[in-house]
Image 1 (cartoon, rainbow, N blue to C red):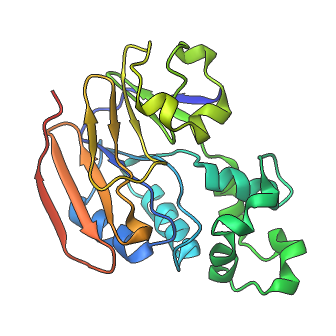
Image 2 (image 1 turned 30 degrees about the horizontal axis):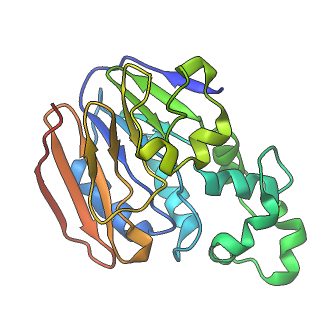
Length: 238
């Protein structure tokens, strides 16, 4: 298990699956305007399927330069990409068939470039993918990409479950004393199953929305696919 733990003050945000939709991410970041003391957690799946994966990573790296704290978690798509590039990861043979072609095209790569793709991707981007965390504990919340194995404690969790699990996690209560904030499984709306879980993948790349939750005041920010207009409202978190 690989994890990241922090106790920063300020506002706490979590952003759902982006999948190469850079314009919508830019709109969300402008709307929330993170400042010093704030923490912004990304639950992974920055790349694949959408048109601008490389631009998404640029936005993430620019945010990292600000005074806000950033937490970048790994999604299963980044794990596949790392493996495809010949780096530690899993299921690289499935990368191109799961939206990876769009990611490679966003870096200007052609089919002939794919065997040596790692040499065509900016080193700062490769470094970004390599240093992604698997989970982030900020009591009372645990942030992961896909979820957790319901019967295991945090120190017993397996990386594969935290990147890939779906129904077993979604439809069962878990043993960890934390609300699990996750993406991975696209839904029509935010899944609120307190105190157990909060699902924030609202299917942006499939024509849905990009979701950002602010936990300190209980606010929901969303932007539709292809739109620049961010709508916000309160959300019950207690």
